[in-house]
Amino acid sequence: MGLQHRPIDAAPQAEAGRRAETPAALRGHLALLEENQGETPWCGPASLALATGRSYADAATLLRGIAPTWYPAEGPIVTAYWRDLLGALDQAGIAHAPLALPAPRRSLLRFAREGLAPGWYLVRVTDHFLLLHSHGFGLTTLHDNRHTGVLVSARTHGQRHVTHATRLLGGPLAGA
Image (cartoon, rainbow, N blue to C red; front, side):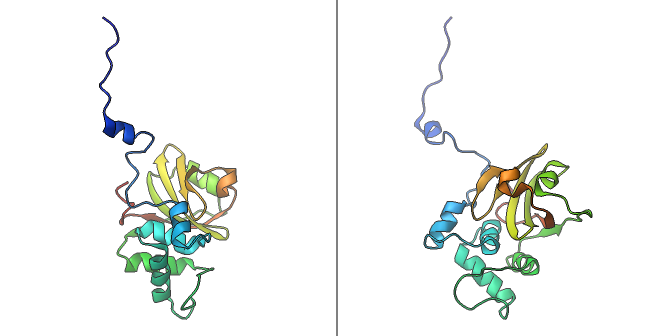
């Protein structure tokens, strides 16, 4: 009556260490770095690319289409605007619901830990755009131009204040 061992199957071994619920459309910051020819991508187009499942270049094109007078026709988009990110989500057909934020502004760490429903969020914190994936119970991971799936902490923008947030209801991340 010894221990029974399961037969070893090559497929589960190949999938070891991968999270089953990670959507195939979600790329990380290293993929965005590669798409941007090795240059660190800027946070606005990077967050939009991750939220829409489009390339970094396509996200910049979306922003240029929303506000052609604000963004250069060529080259990097260094500064993006919240209204333009929301307009690009609308143009891409990704439903979203803005969150009412309390005054005074909360830190990202507090925002993530205090009652954030499970799901994906596009967030603007002081001088930065990012995606949050709330897993529930205060467990939230961050995705941006320098991080992929890291826990929100003081070292990962956690002390910055949340200025705008919208929950992603559609698009490639909504089912994750």
